[in-house]
Length: 198
Ligand SMILES: Nc1nc2c(ncn2[C@@H]2O[C@H](COP(=O)(O)OP(=O)(O)O)[C@@H](O)[C@H]2O)c(=O)[nH]1
Ligand SMILES: [Mg+2]
Image (cartoon, rainbow, N blue to C red; front, side):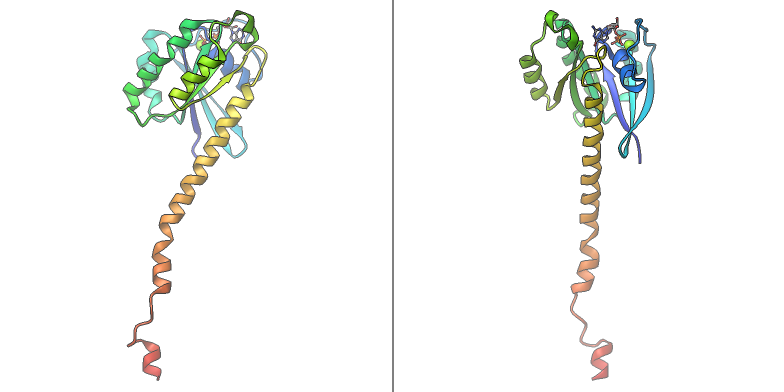
């Protein structure tokens, strides 16, 4: 089965690399590790293999990131709940993706990171919900640092991918059925084998 391709996008410093390591290694990286270009890891969840791509938010890497967007199944739009600018930038990230993939783009998931710092919150859950709704996305508040809801986010994507695969298989089967049925119900020809026996 082909992997479910998931790409993390968002401004530098929102915690994409921390989310990536928190989920794939189960540890929160102690030091800020500058991401160069892109990095990916795979993880098996149930019957799905997730391929998760971490990207650098710097302007100069955006063109590079674009090459990885066309085959993405899901884009995680990551912002920092304590940084309004990172939330505001999500519309620019969406625009950037659309430039590469057009309107038939990937499914969006809005992820507000650093929920452990909720006392410094600059983005309310309500506005994040309204924004996510406007782009047909689900929304999560997580903390890479505390490991809060990180696995839930990725497992929900595996579940969505399983549903999508089942729906695609059902659709393919449904279109394959009419031909044999049409042959079975076809009335026997009068000049056939049986009519000659009589
Ligand atoms: N308090 C808190 N800090 C975080 C969290 N996730 C990441 N950070 C910190 O935010 C900074 C930027 O994280 P990084 O993963 O490098 O961000 P990236 O540029 O989006 O990849 C680092 O100092 C991280 O330790 C979190 O959930 N809570
Ligand atoms: Mg990074």
